[in-house]
Length: 107
View 1 (cartoon, rainbow, N blue to C red):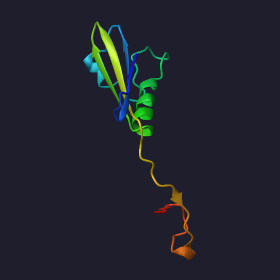
View 2: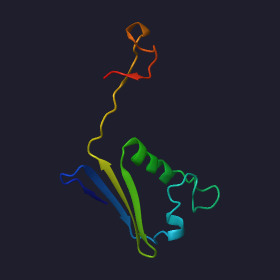
View 3: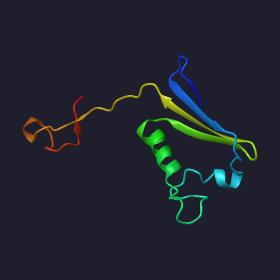
View 4: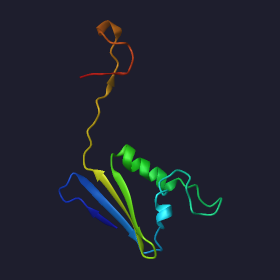
């Protein structure tokens, strides 16, 4: 495992193994929900899908996989050091020109 954060806008984490690698025909499906190479009943196929969603959707990062069959697999995760914070929704009463619901933003 290697971590790099040398002054850039993102932190990078690499995890590598020295296993059997992942064949190209499987690599494209790795992050699909319920995809598994395990026998029926031994895996849900949700681990990498959930990881992908957490990294990309919740943290605005990226996750990539590089693999050489018979040699290694390496996952590279990049997470931004800072992420813009969206404005908080505000309730603006109708008496003050709002619609009276929580879908408006205070600017």
